[in-house]
Image (cartoon, rainbow, N blue to C red):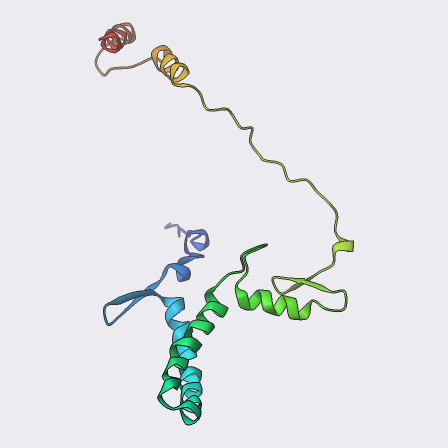
Amino acid sequence: MNELTVYALTGMTRDASAQRRMVIQGFDIPARVFMVVLAAAGPALVITLIGWAFVGSYAIVLLPAFLAAVFVLVEGRSRSGLRLRNYQALLDRKRSSNGRWFVCGEEFDPLHGSAITIISSSAHRPVASLDEMLLAVEKAPVKVAGASSGEAHRDAVHAWDD
């Protein structure tokens, strides 16, 4: 009977959408950046046309300024804390009123939690010095195909001394 093999690809493909790129007229840009600029282009054009009625041809500056502002708001990240995207940090700040805290869009109540200490799962070893590494290499057994272990060790030691 044939068995069906199933692979868990979620771990490998979870961030794949963040890595996607698009080539437009020879420009290679991330797909998310393209979508942000595409979504902001319509409102930017409307604002530029409204500005044209008031200030004339100087309103053309509004188009790249608006696109840059939207890009910084959507793609930029805060400089401290969890480094959230700027719009997420603004939404959390706006919602966090009346004694309520929001972190990443989720309400956070510090009184209902418990304090824990996070420790590393493995012991750290100091880096060995060059002399210690060379000593370990000299003591390590070396096997050469077609030779007995005694001959191979003797050959390796003599080769090391040369």
